[in-house]
Image 1 (spheres, one colour):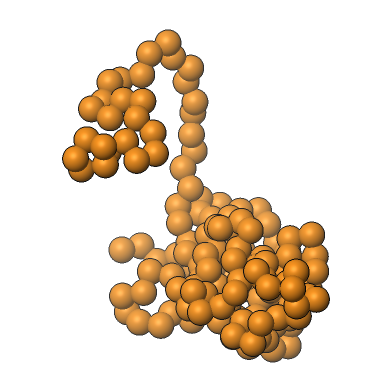
Image 2 (image 1 turned 30 degrees about the horizontal axis):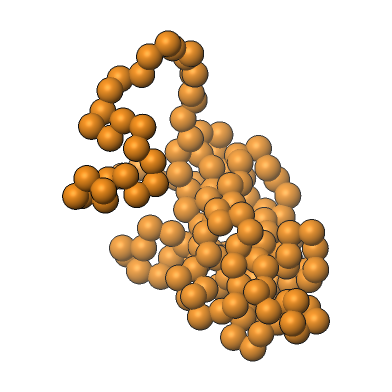
Length: 153
């Protein structure tokens, strides 16, 4: 498998280089250096890093599975970091308890130094869109949400 080199610049003195937990891990952990509260996105978790992602790739950021033990949810679900972005990487979370706790975090939520999200470097494809009059037919056809379950799948 091809290895991809990602250049990283620390922009916070406590920033950590991303880590990969096991040989089978698809994603790497990213660590919080600061929490910016009550922004228009919710709370932004600064990772203290800037990255130079190769032109044919992008970085996808996801909540960690540990996130199920917090009251946080990501308003973006997945964050996409494009190869031409050179600013500090941050990950947004909203706290489900903000409204009843006056903006204070619930005790089980992430703190500075914690692994707060996971990243995955993926290739990006150049796409040409072609308008057509007809699409190929499939067994599912126009069936939407839950339609395969209705057919016994």
